[in-house]
Image 1: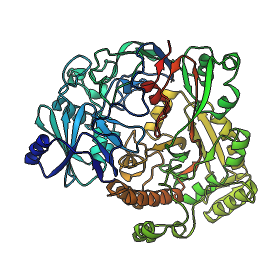
Image 2 (image 1 turned 180 degrees about the vertical axis):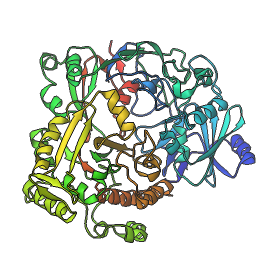
Image 3 (image 1 turned 60 degrees about the horizontal axis):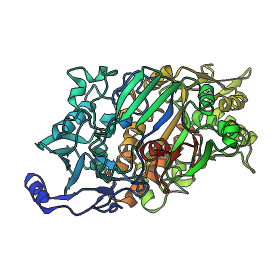
Image 4 (image 1 turned 60 degrees about the vertical axis):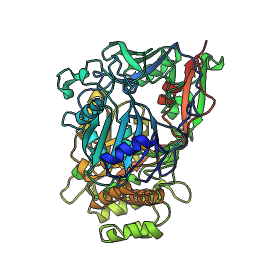
Length: 598
């Protein structure tokens, strides 16, 4: 991705590393394409209250069920809150696009040739059992998750790491296969656990054993599939580090599981749990009301954010014959009426997703020009002319457009692709009907798909939708056993290796990958590589815009919608910092920075 801005570093350690590797630039913190916001002697993040009081409890809701404490494997359904158990090598800042600060590692040294990075482990770092954390533990954690026993996603995230090399008890070097400008920072996000957690057991079978790990909490008790309680570790070694000061304040964090959306909503209003991030516009508009809201016992807020909104959509599984033809996908997309849905179903709370990098400077606009055009030019023969001559615009029924006009265009596209209507049913030259099923993991989306299905029926297309148990849904998505699925591709302000898992051909048949659409296009592959290898912010933006343009023209999904605020409701039991982060998950922000009143 982009070159790193680094703080100065103490001379002794730098000289030591110069002996062991190529000329290096060393620092306790690092950022992508800019100097880190916080100086070496910073005391806390600006969006944190360093004097937050410890104590109390927070009760949250989980969806469906769980049968595992291990988030690093494909098997099972990991419990909510595992991020409380595992610290990363370095800490991220939520008011910068992509930066790292000392946590388990207190120094990072990127080789001048950018083909390796060295982390120095803080000798004070400890696991939750009191054992010290060493470079060997870091190597073990890395080697384990990228092995065949780890979740396949880690092979994409860390695929450019050649190996991990121990330099001494507290120093580890990761050697790279090739230039990958973000990889040293991605490695800073590596979560660390102890070999004692495995105790000789196969990692891919390790589900119900409490982790021996590095984070601020441990598991106190649980009822498998129903509830879990995390307990703050009073001996957490990092609690006074600048990157942790004022954070993780609740003595207890509990998750109660609910299998049904309606039951979960009523449970919140009855006070069974404390905080709800609302994803459903109907519930936000119609259900978050009543005496407890009127009295101020429950508070509602829309919190602004600057997150990359990414893309959400009804994803076509192009592994299925019915969706192989881009023209068919385009025609089906034309039948979705976002404007009608937003007005009638969403209470005008959303805007349409118009990019895989919505709400950022990374999204494609207009037609390609300048350096973006130069980047796309070598692929001209492999791309439709429209990529170069027509701006991509989301389907719209806003005047002067209309649903009728869109359906008329869809009929023309389908006719040109060899489809015809026979007795009200759209069939191809083999008299095979165009029909498919959308797989859903929870109730709520059916009310949106019902009018969409009616529109498709006017074209002779039969779309069914089926809601299944969450555990079955996860299993089927992991194995690509669906025609269509609702997919969400959120992102950072500095996209990189995660794109391999989402859009690269190497992920098409990898069970558990996020290449939900089965994108298998050499041009997309090449542009993903351009994003990953971008040497500065300008090149990153150019590569992302080019990739965005090609993905959009591929019609791999029916774009949905997004909102640039976090809708939250919570019981008035808590205090929080005065300053909001810029780029944040509202759940993790609440967990890390709020504290109990009283």
